[in-house]
Image (cartoon, rainbow, N blue to C red; front, side):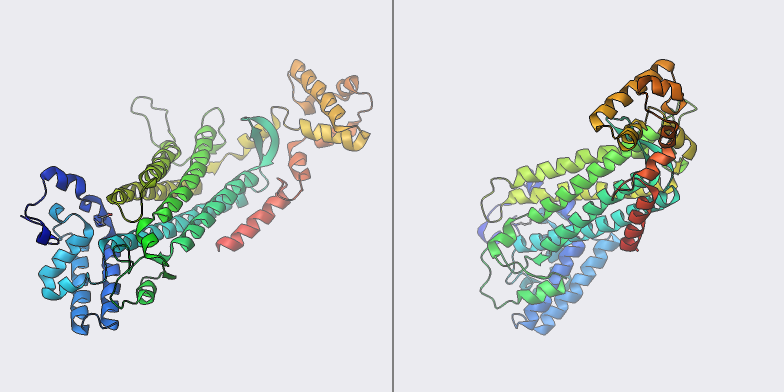
Length: 459
Ligand code: ARG
């Protein structure tokens, strides 16, 4: 039988395969609350502008609340024949309130309706990401505060480079997640315009009030061009772009936790609550949560690529291709929120191993740069020469199988006669980090400044 929404033109109903490829109700039901909020705002506006009667609008608005409670209560019967959430809701409204339901779609199209619903949905997810990031950053700041002056090795190429502080390393991630947070804020601000009232693509001849519906839905203003309003999904792509970069940061941090929790590093102990065991190896405690967070970038970036490909080359205005936007964003958002929550839990629970960090900080000739800087400062040596002299001292220590502070003054003077006893003062890891007082540097006093600044932002 022909469709109840557009049956006028059709003699036959769709093929089963057509129905299967066309229907989006299997996933867009997740936008039910947004769809109903949009319809309730639209109904109120239709009455305020005299397009429908107050009593019809009242019936629509009440009936829509009933539909919402049926959906939320799980008693709503979704129908694939009705394609999507928009027609499922409207058809049920008709059953509940009768004839006035048929007036709800005046001056509106599913094209502006879906654009509105999806913007509202993505806006909520941007807010959730912002909340999730704030929680994670708060947990990282607490870790930084506890170990603001704990020393650990800093790496480049994953080779020992120079000693840094635990607090400094934690605060590096706070900076990264802080930029993620501001990216979600930027995206949210840009997406917060209302497509509602763009209708199919050209606007409408009814005297609608787009300012009114925009305000009712918490948008800053109506979108200025009706063709653009139904055509673009750049707001979703921006969300996915911000999510992708955030997932990169999560993945890098997860990788460090996997390395740090290994028996070879022992920098951190992850809590039982965020670890799993092995079914065969009784000693195992695996960092599965970190590994899964590390992997989430795969589907999040995948969604970003998928939606980019869907949108490229589409002519204006709406094309059904755009129905493929939602599942990608739903999946990316779900997994980003899960990854943020899991990382927050792991960071809150983890115990840094101060002794292991400090022992590792001093190995690998990590204060060689301090030694070279001392030669420059004390002996007025050009840095290139100091680099060479220090390199010879490192080679000597390597041959003797000891660290730089274990060389004797005689060893040192054998390489360069002018070296004095004072040099030993700069070879310790605590001296090393304390000396790096340049702005943004690893000295504990500098790290505490960073901590204070972020605590103020996050409070
Ligand atoms: N389910 C559709 C979507 O998600 C709603 C818009 C349908 N519009 C249309 N002209 N067929 O994109």
